[in-house]
Image (cartoon, rainbow, N blue to C red):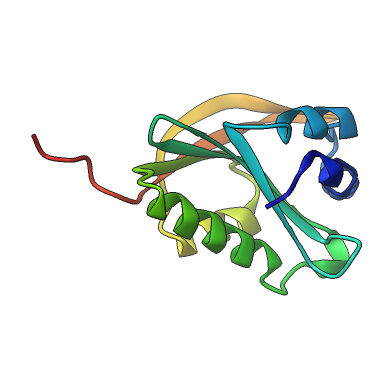
Length: 148
């Protein structure tokens, strides 16, 4: 699992993957403790990162990114698989995330892992010099709720 010392890796990956990247300080604060945890993969420097927030039996993918030159090597898939397995072992019931509806590769990845659309946030992602893009809210159930 990642620590606040890995914040620079997260920030560098984000800088190369997103128009409005999160800062190293933001990642350091998020990685400082529960309920947020992260994973990084790839040869040093890190090439892929995943940040998850887990609260009361639910987990949310805050960000998943892979450096452009390292894509299609299953790095993001491995991180997501590890996060899902560990969360399931802790009794997490479901995973949520938001993804730009225009992000075909991410949508394909999440579909492969059993995420399904449960909602939409219109014009959620503001883009430079382009119209805003809606976010799809995706969910994957892991462990069923206990029956009383």
